[in-house]
Image 1: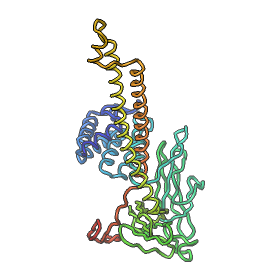
Image 2 (image 1 turned 180 degrees about the vertical axis):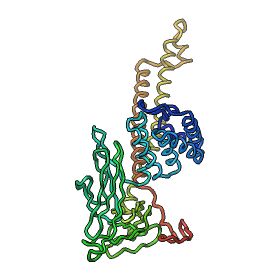
Image 3 (image 1 turned 45 degrees about the horizontal axis):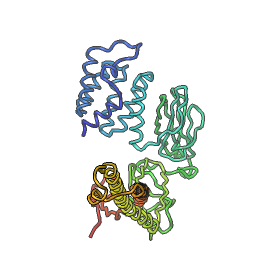
Length: 418
């Protein structure tokens, strides 16, 4: 499996050893030692030997710090290991070293794929024709005003926004908190993520100024919108809300389960960031609607089988009628002229032209019925599959017994208890 992942990532990169390690036209030709280490690192990566690949690729990067090839493959190694932060960092280094590389688009795809796998918000806009990039800003406090180069761009968490590439100073400010500042380089064609930490200002009354969240370093919040009377379980167990009606959760991914009387239990996975508030709306559909779609789907599948059987039967009838017409025509054409008709008719019944034409028309009618039946069967099958896909069988709620916060250890049981 590791070998398949390695080959898939290598194919996505679209790099052969010589091309990936080759410097841009203005750079000095790489040394033999670099080529040897880089080649060994790429070979180890493709064989799934990731520790060895990292060792050789890092050695190659130290030998030729200006070449992007080793960093590109270090990003691929990190992606194969699900090390999303390392993948993003290595891909950014490769892009920064040579934005004009022939492999730049492949490197950006690796970068964006690792951001998506890490649950970071994707950029759906246009970077612009002049080599622009984008920036996304998160902080341990929601609602902090974000400025880049002195211009306001919104509040935390700031979704990816298009911005000119280059170095910029990013700040996040909110009443009751000390302003956080960071300098970052916005790279062309990718999203640059900036994470800021605001410290509480002890001089501000109330610590939170305009009602901001207390600087709890190890928690985030989930605000749910669900139908009245719903039961909410997070990671398999009931979870209390705080005084603002939110769920305080440890950073990471959590499974949210919402059930209500006469409604289908619905589950979603949500990613909680430290100090951030996530919002989720869940509206489980009624069991009556789900069962109605399931019935429609089953009727569609049954109808598909029935019409397919009719199509097959009428196809056989059509073929039989056509064979009979063909045999009758052949018999009349080949009837011997030198034998009295009374004698030949005793052997082969006489068929008039009108009778043969009637057999042909009967075959055509059966063929039409068969084609229509097959068409209706195909439509019924599509409707049945679509309805059943939209109305899967409800999975029974899980029973989970485990600590879900802090650093304690526990035992998790999944399934339905008898």
